[in-house]
Amino acid sequence: MSAQVVFVHGIRTSATMWRAQVEHLRSIGVGAVAVDLPGHGKRMSETFTLDGAFETIDAAVRDAASRGPVLLVAHSMGGLVSIEYAGREDKPPVDAFIAAGCTAIPRGVGLAAYRALTRGFDRLPRRGQYFTDLVLDRTLPAETRADFGAGGYAYDTQDIALRSLSVLDLVAALARIDVPMWFVNGQWDQLRVNERLFTTLKPEAELIVVPRTSHLVTAMRPRVFNAVIDLALATMAAKSASA
Image (cartoon, rainbow, N blue to C red; front, side):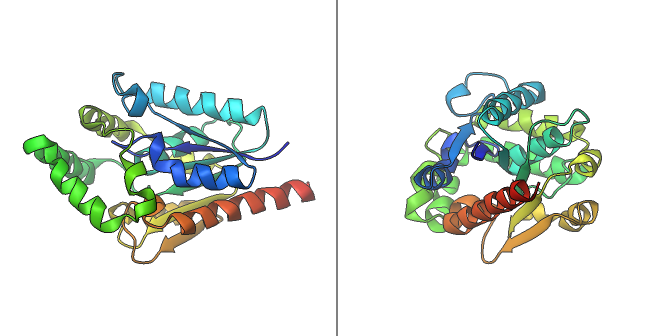
């Protein structure tokens, strides 16, 4: 049975943000699926709930596990939710985990400030889409620029999703994760704020910081991120061979 990869997107975006990674994996014969969380992408009309997000991830992971060992890859909000999922007491069938752009505890002043900022952008014409496009046009390479927003932007879901994150117990979840794990951050990622805490809680996990890269590390440096995925798959294969 060959390894399978499940991708979970970040806030506002959708499964399309992973096109470069999915195409890379399919080119080397590795099964891959990218999910849309409730309220995002093809499910934009739905209401986001944590339970719905967990159900979506679990369904994709268990389906993938029927075909082989599972590498879970998640970014930003999707990473935070996936940490909670992977660290359940009733362990899901996840064999390795890449958590990108999500080394932050979503509580307190930081979360409140981020919510206030996003609500401020919502009051701008077109909900600040002009500024979003400007930043993405200047930072993302041509090969991923169209993919990042191809599934639309979940503006109506954003505050609901952010508010829900405060109940996550990431400290307890991280302590329960016992599979090979990688934290991947961009050098200028604002969600590196608790990076030291996360690496202290998971000293066996590898921390990879990609130079000259923002929070959107998966799209800004797709080849680098693909190389991290290849590393995780090689680690899984070596572990399986030695078992």
